[in-house]
Amino acid sequence: MRIFSKKSFQFDHPTGQEPAVVVLAGSFVDVPDWVSDSTMFKLASQDGDVDVIGNKKDEIAAETGSRGKVAAAKKPEEQASAESGQQQ
Image (spheres, one colour):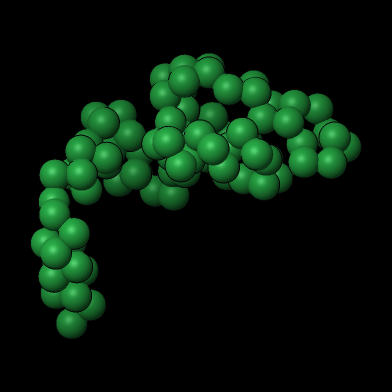
């Protein structure tokens, strides 16, 4: 799994069976899949401090910081109508 981290974090394995993974602020990092099950990752994701990078578009959005700004700028009604328009 590839992530972009806006802050430095240490992700501990949920059962402690593997060494912790440390990521530095402002970096793209390939991490083991179990990281998504760690408590720190879940909290950091909710706060928007960590983004999962699925493709080049996600990477560009993370680099420019536009991912959160675009979604935050739209009202919930606008997002719903935009999403329904894309599904047609």
